[in-house]
Image 1 (cartoon, one colour):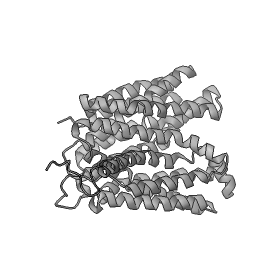
Image 2 (cartoon, rainbow, N blue to C red):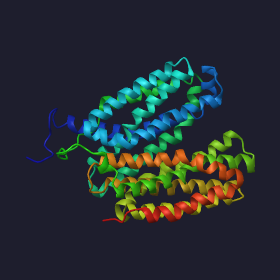
Image 3 (cartoon, one colour):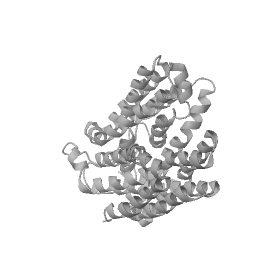
Image 4 (cartoon, one colour):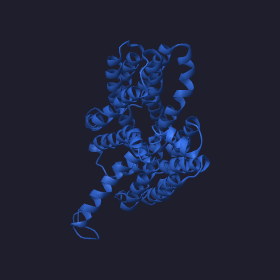
Length: 386
């Protein structure tokens, strides 16, 4: 019989279920960034409701991102060892519980604890979703699939502040109720089962920390830290040099994510032709030029256009590094992509700490230094394609 012979449930049900699982897989890429960024535009409302100031409420961003990035170093390996489908379903269940806790939280302390739990659960979904996508996709079409996944991630990141703000018009807590419902649906649908043979030995973290993976991870760290991670610097510049209002600043910063939504899938298709390393080099070199323009140009429209195109350049890097690590032949691909994703978000976390002091002394240098690192280090560090 052909390998396409229907399994349990009949020939009509299996394709429908598989289609739903693939949709849920991509939707999971949307949920992670959305859940992290949904508080960004509603911090004053959260602070007022919980009896604290906006600065204290802003710690909810760190409470989500810090465990998210830290646990991603090991979550892919552990999830592969425990089973991707089971791990992701449990993680969605924890995400539902944490989101409901955010919805009901009476104090800031409980709200922050729930955000920590949210970020921890998300660490066990994102890398395993990517690994499952790679397992369900022919190698020749991997870039296309990863590009579509990247577009969903960009959509989640870009829409989170807007949807959070709309929810706050009624009650900011409603945003977390919606997140809980969506996570519950995704957990119920599950993931496509891989047809790859089961590993004979448990997944090991040291297989994910091999030099090739770490080199790709450094490129991801620079690609996100020196591109998308610079949004806070651009916000500073818009305020200090041009006196733009918060609303205008927010709209201008959003064009970066919009560019990612529009371009990620097309970039993935291109990666299937030119290869992952070439994609990262295009994104790094082009991104370095665009970051320099963003930091030096004296006209807001020029900066806005450069920032939009920088969003395209970031997808060349981010989809490229995912394609590089998931397209490699090494063991423990789930753990490997987990390490790369952890380094990517680590770059975003390190950027404010490293660049804010430089901005205070020389705003231009705070853009030119990451541009130089991106142009020089990222192309050199990427492993050659086999």
